[in-house]
Length: 208
Image 1: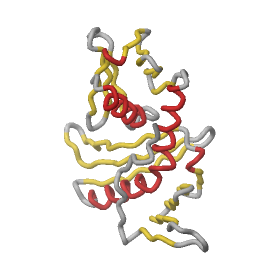
Image 2 (image 1 turned 135 degrees about the vertical axis):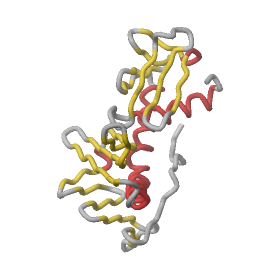
Image 3 (image 1 turned 90 degrees about the horizontal axis):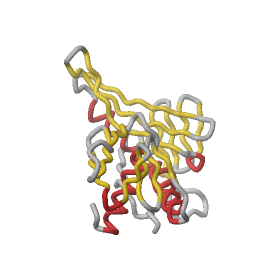
Image 4 (image 1 turned 60 degrees about the vertical axis):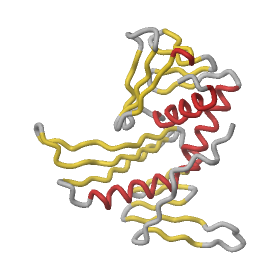
């Protein structure tokens, strides 16, 4: 199974996006420049630090509230890319709703542009590894061909349920109420990878 069709739907925003055609190329090479961020389909440069997307082994992204005492006064979109020896963490912050739309557009445009080279590639690799009998560890979960190992208990696929929330993915055992965990999108590597894997898994088995 290959996830070439896994798509977020590319968002194009004229104020900081342009496409150029390289000589002899049949497809435009997409480039996004936005202040101290430059993104192509091959790499990301942020504050003079460069990461090649094919080297990315982990990704985190999501939204966090900014609170003062009991009040939410703003929010922050976070996108983090990791390689074996590098880490880029980009933040798109707004307060009191000001520039919320702009920061959301910046965040999603970058995510869309790197999607195939990161999420799709990593998901294909995860499926290939598990199909070949290997395991993949994401947070406290070890994913295997037979289910997810959590707290020294193997949750078989037919025993597993999951919930997607705005800030986390929750994994549960249907048979054991004490076997569960929360995986927060901005705190744990590759949670979205596990989420898309589970969506694919249960769509193909119909168990969930």
